[in-house]
Length: 133
Image (cartoon, rainbow, N blue to C red; front, side, top):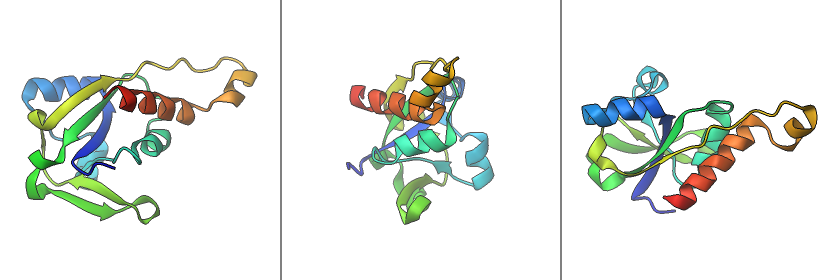
C-alpha cells in the first residue's frame, strides 16, 4: 500500500462539476458525515461493492495525500481498518489520475445474475481501473 495515494469513487457528474470549480466539497454522504470519505487501494474494491453496487456513471480518482495537509486524518472504520478522511474540500489539483468506470449492464437472466452480483461487478470494474491508473 502506498499511503501517498488514496482513492475516491464518485459519480462522473460530481467529478465534472468539481473539476470545473477547482474543488470537490464532497458527496451528499460526505457532507452528512462531515468529511470526505477515501479508501486505500486495498480498501476501494470493498467500498465499491458495499456503497456503489448497481450504480452507473462512476469515476475513480487517485489523490496525492501530500497535497492535503493536516485536514487528512486516518481513522478506524470498517473492521477497525484505518481509512483516510478529509476534513475539508478536495482541491482538484490534488487529483493525479482519473479513470471513468464502464457502465455495467445488469444481468437479465438468473444464470448470469448467479455469476456476478452488482457489488462484485462494480468491485471488478474498480480493480480494472486501478490497474490502469
